[in-house]
Image (cartoon, rainbow, N blue to C red):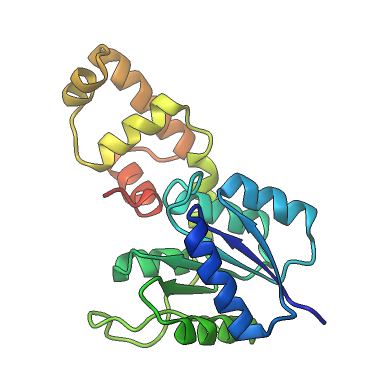
Length: 217
């Protein structure tokens, strides 16, 4: 039976590179479907129920940090997803695995190593790169709470999302008001709405719960 792999990356050259990875891992008979954003990926999965694996860039349009990834995982819980990313920080790898992906492949990997990772995930394993600062070989467990929080983040307005990012960066209401050219009372109202939508009772908890998903630089 042919294996169908979804390749989601906004860089055409890297999509081409991933096609070669799939061919090396699964043979020339493997089928690939390509897209360049999270919305396109969702549409492809919705209309192509026979997709066996998704290879996804962490920073393509619509991903919204890890929030988009967790949201996709919540809607398609049985589809194995491998993140392919240039961000190799162990915190990013661990957060992606907690969000429910089946693997994490650094873009610095060779084609052969990427192909081996693809085969490992299709065989039912969880693949993640070894890092010098991780003391255990066990991958972090999937945390369903991350998919719940991703769904809550998706309910925020554009302005609320912007203010949440400032909160995660540790900025005060006064700073946010000046940056966005709005009244400080308006910022406070937005913060109250953010806390209500995220179902947390303090801005500290909002930062703790939403911060790992948004992965701000």
